[in-house]
Length: 162
Image (cartoon, rainbow, N blue to C red):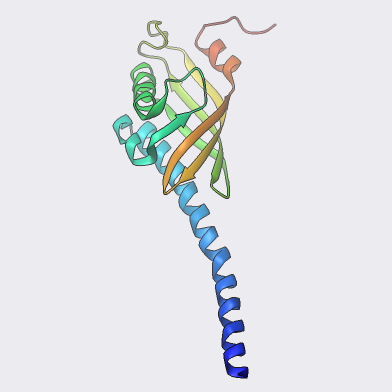
């Protein structure tokens, strides 16, 4: 009987010891998913690869962006048409549970049409904080906070503050 109890306790200890490692692996995989999305779809200019990273029923919570996976591809394509050197650099990334949060610095030169405006040649540099919810290895929801004023000033959409 003592052997059965000892084996049972050892099994529980091993299971509990393995659980945090599995969770850490999931967190690392979730962070890598977001890194790969930015690197491939945006930095390597492959918007159609968004389907690798976003679920078919993906929900975009930014009301200024088109909805769903088709909207994601359309938006990325429009950005890449407007900025031949558009680039995202993740400066911070944190994962907990099924969520990944990034602070990303975006740079580029508007050398093509964007937001209905012709090329300006203006350089942009602005930051976003993006919140991704991951399920089964794909992004299922996205929220963001964008440094819109910096971007709008750089694009000549608004005058710089005094």
